[in-house]
Structures are given as C-alpha cells and as structure tokens.
Amino acid sequence: MPKGSFQSADIETGSAFLPKFDANGLLSAVILDCDSNDVRMVAFMDQEALDATLDTGIAHFHSRSRGKLWKKGETSGNVLRVVSIKVDCDQDALVIACKPAGPTCHTGAQSCFYRELDLDSRTLKSS
View 1: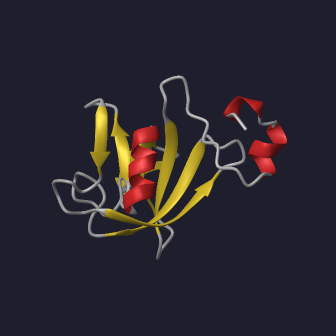
View 2 (view 1 turned 120 degrees about the horizontal axis):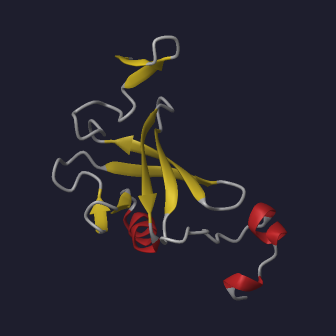
C-alpha cells in the first residue's frame, strides 16, 4: 500500500514503519546511552542516514552544516552502536539507544548536554 494511503490510525498504532520526514527531508533523533539512559545528543536523520543506520547498526545522521551523510565517529572512532530504536506516535522523531564507544560530544564531553541552565540566574553551569 502506498505511504499516502495509510490512515492516521495506521501511523499512530499500526505496525508499519512510516517515518514522517519534515519539509527538509529530516526527522529528529534523540540519542540515549543504552546503559544509563542519559541523553547523549540530538541530531537529524534523512532517509539515507536512516537506511545506513539500519543497514550497519552504527548511527548515521544528516550533517546540516556539511549537507551530507555523517557516520558518528567516522574520524574520532567514537561510534554509536545501535541497540534499539523507538518511534514516536506520529513517526516524526526517534529515540535511539546506543552503546557509545567513547565521548559523544565534539568537545570531548560524554554528552552534548553537559551544561545546565540555572533558572534563577539564567546562566549556564557545568553539570
């Protein structure tokens, strides 16, 4: 059945994987550490990145700055081995649990989320 002929219920509660990419051909991917459930990073995937991830078991993303496929860890060796993928109700976002091979952030931090906003002073502090 063509993708356009699926009903909302098929997408929201059915078993067909029908990722809903945005106008730029992207969907959001939240990356979790499979052991700690800590958020490691948020990135974007296009169809090419999603296919590469599913085919290899290694997380791939669409680099918006470079405009091309990006295998996480291609230069650092800090790849993200996919353990599971959860899909949200309207299939436009993924939560990908991974086994990280090292730090995830390009700064060398374990997570890209290494600072917390102090709600009173509205300044950042390392967490």
